Image: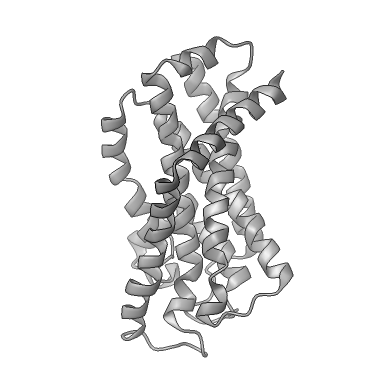
Length: 254
């Protein structure tokens, strides 16, 4: 029963995603603008470090941006389900709240990963050399990060009843998460207060893990800020915490 419920939730969200082609186009257009317009402009100001250009440095951050916006947008489906009554049908079904959260998080992670993989395939145009193992590892990390961010978005969405209120708070969450994630500049070079804030950002560890896979630098100011083991540990632990918190929030409001 629990597995079937997860399958139905994932299949429903995936079908909605397939039908909304504009959603896919906008999700891909945003990272392309940041990568080839903002990245190309900043490359004129930031000199290459050990042969690595600024565009190559921000590439993991652009993957993180794709995941962040897509995963957070996926959590909006909870608001729509509340407004149209579908959430009440889910909550009265004989399945646990934990199953609902896992289903929603999985659907968000699958959709986000698909979009991130499309962006990932642009790596040859940036002069990056990724082998098959690197690509598989990057996709695996995208799945983990997408699940974590999706679960985080679900926790936030449970506290709002309307699309307008949820969208308003998202503007105060998404952009700070992106800019304090090491996507545009190394965490180690930030001022003390911002560096501390970045360490409490789930996306920081996701992007840092992607740097280990896609960045040719292993040391220096543009290298990853944490070890890959630390990144994976934080992502997994936070995913578990967010899923449990989301289930608790649904129980309180169910």
